[in-house]
Amino acid sequence: MMRLGVNIDHVATVRQARRSHEPDPVTAAALAFQGGADGITIHLREDRRHINDRDLRILRETVPTGLNLEMATAPEMMAIAIGAKPDQITLVPEKRQELTTEGGLDVVGQFAVVKNAVRMLQDAGIVVALFIDPNVDQVRASAECGVTAVEFHTGAYAEARNPVAVAGQMATLRESCVLAHRSGLHVHLGHGLNYINVKPVVRLPHVEELNIGHSIVARAVLVGMAQAVRDMKTAMSEHFPKQV
Image 1 (cartoon, rainbow, N blue to C red):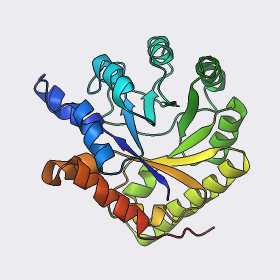
Image 2 (cartoon, rainbow, N blue to C red; image 1 turned 90 degrees about the vertical axis):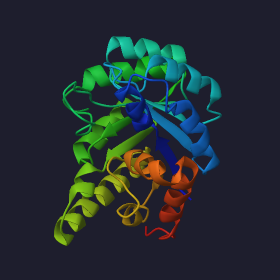
Image 3 (cartoon, rainbow, N blue to C red; image 1 turned 180 degrees about the horizontal axis):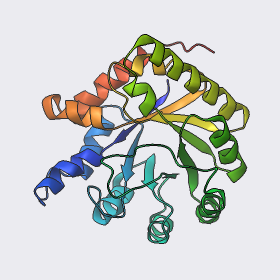
């Protein structure tokens, strides 16, 4: 079964709304593992709007495996990442005014910057993935950077509102998954996935990991984090085996 990485950023968002000490994303991570999570994803933004340096430090000490740190290629973030040495770094685009990540990293347009960041992180012994749109050119540029994996931004699929649009987005994702696999890249997906729209996604070929945050955290408010993760794992398993 494919892995589930639980993004706990929005647990920290609730905490930061009151500049308080709760809810603690560290505790949320422990409960997520109780529910069957295979890893934890956090995005340490330059403005520290949710996850902060303390969270990263303690999570690095307590998460047994699969700590995935999302971050921009800014020098400050690179230094923090190299010091923390998470299990994986996923390089993402970042804009201060956005509510959440609005699209994939433009590897084609920022090739030199991205490739240099990848090299620095790999030299420090860190596995690197790139968060990109499902686009042929972006896949090829990512492979040229020498990364281990790509995570396809599934926002356009999640926002599709009619069967034709959904089918089109699924076709694009399928094509990108196949190309990434043929290029020697591991394939991950994330952004906007929930308990309903995840069901077709798990049938896509070569996908090894989903990273899901907002939907799980929203459900956890009502049923608890461990149960919310269990429910997502169940939703992910209902449509196996995958089509190839």
